[in-house]
Image (tube, rainbow, N blue to C red; front, side, top):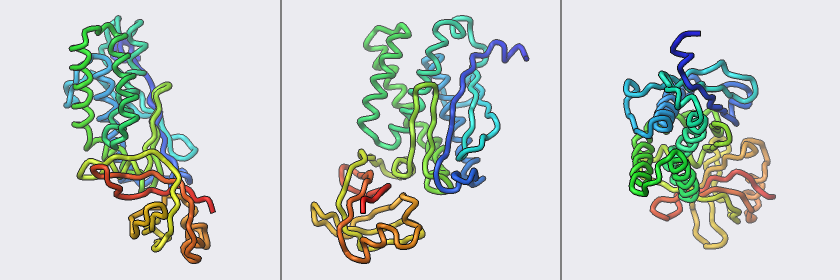
Length: 283
């Protein structure tokens, strides 16, 4: 083992892709290469801030290496190994044990903030604040300044987040990232919000009663009428794999023009419904 690795504080970041091609242990190479690039930037920046409480936007300013182990069978998953190079004895001691959980919280916050999930943002921000205070920063002004720095860091990493979720909606249905107990998932609704040019918000999953009027079984794109409001020709995207099976619940409901109860997440622009992402149907 080299002197550098002996001085480094290391911890694992578990990355997993599920759904679509990854269920057959395959993933699009171009999408994966983009994702690895984005994940490397996000993991490096979050780990650097967790260990130094300072934001860095260029790799040469970070004493962080992100290595990756071989992919494992089962969907498509791998472990990224974070090395905080030149870690001081203090960081490899008691304080160092908190760094992975803080880094995991910041990683989750970056994706949640860029997908516009406001309730999860509040929850993760509270966890980050508690971690900052436990690290010895008791002054309210310092804590607020550090939280504002995390916000700016998350905003600056939006392009990296777009790269990281490149396979989601393509060869994968979702990505999950875990650092110890800190775990987050980005599905197709969240990925589309991250990719959007204008800010979007992803709502909580709920039940909707809809009347399907158009459906593309290949892409899952659809149009529907919301039974509760009566608004017609709303945009939808069915992410349920069953949509590709002949005579599925969606096709049957549209053919007979009967209402269908679905589980879905909405994406909103300035509070107005943009699209409904449908994950399941109760026929």
